[in-house]
Amino acid sequence: MERTFLAKNPSTLWFLLALSLFTIVITLLSEAAGGGFVSTSFLKTLGKTLCLCLVAVAMDVVWGYCGILSLGHFAFFGIGGYAIGMWLMYERTRDIVVSSLETGVLPPTPDEVTQAIGTQIFGVVGSSEFPAIWAFSHSLTLQLLAVVLVPGLLALVFGWLAFRSRVTGVYLSILTQAMTLALSLYFFQNDTGLRGNNGLSGLQNIPGFEATSQDILSLWFFWASAVALALGYILFAWITSGKLGSVIRAVRDNEARVRFLGYHVESYKLFVFTVTAMIAGIAGALYYPQAGIINPAEIAPIASIYLAVWVAIGGRGRLYGAVIGAAVVSLLSSWFTGGSAPDVNLGVYVIKWTDWWLVLLGLVFVAVTLFFPKGIGGLFDLAERRKGQGS
Image (tube, rainbow, N blue to C red; front, side, top):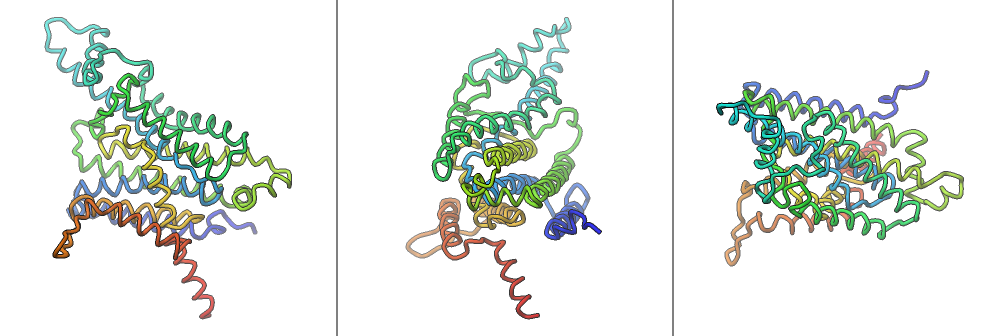
């Protein structure tokens, strides 16, 4: 009898059970459910962390399994956030404008409404005209498609150009970083239609749910983030298992030999690069409504470097390792930079963690690279080996 997918991938089953238990416990302890032990702000932090775990898993597939060190995957994450943010900002502004214009003697014309919306959104950059990039911002369906298709198409075009030229290793990493930097600099400009350095704000206000409190909305987004992480994990577990996963790992270990055996290496790399970019876009679309704001700094190259650090600390080549790395580092970052961590008084100098957190993160990354190359996830392998030796 052929075993089921979960039976052949027990770590996936255990992860889904742990995620389900975590979601249930946090729900019961949340303010929305009456528990009162998990505040709304911390619930949002946990929801955002789940989104970061999803993009970390995508990064692990493209780097840990396929061997492509992409320093641009957080750009796809940001593009997904911008795509849904445009609809959120348009609809929220439209509701405000319509409500204010309805008090006039004559009902407003559609052109007057559109012009007023444009003034409200783009007045901060000295404009009132809707750029072409906002052509579909009125449609939730089309913007949701953009969340997936825009990162996917960008990754497809970039990957096709890079992989067909057989750019590999550090050169490919530099190219992905250059792509990210170019996008970031482009988004910073006021004439891009994305409000430049101001970005898109007020994204936590969901149109049609103005009467719903933030604690309820936060719980809903937390659930959506958990479901997205579960589905994404299952998808990537399926991709990395079986023959497809074997070929991808072979490309990582010895690309020339795989090509000699007759496999079209570029197609496999392009598939992985594109699919992971699309999932990163979905993660971003769930993250930024919980964050409430997105600006070009979110797409800066440093964000993609952080993503690689999370995966390295958690353990490359293990999907659960990427989740652990992203969760641990992002939660610790919130604790250290949010002012919760107490300062350390050394007498001659006071260590303020808001200033020293990045230094600490860098030291941890170096230590993991030198002494624990398999990351936190490698501890599970060590425990399993010791268990086998003991039996």
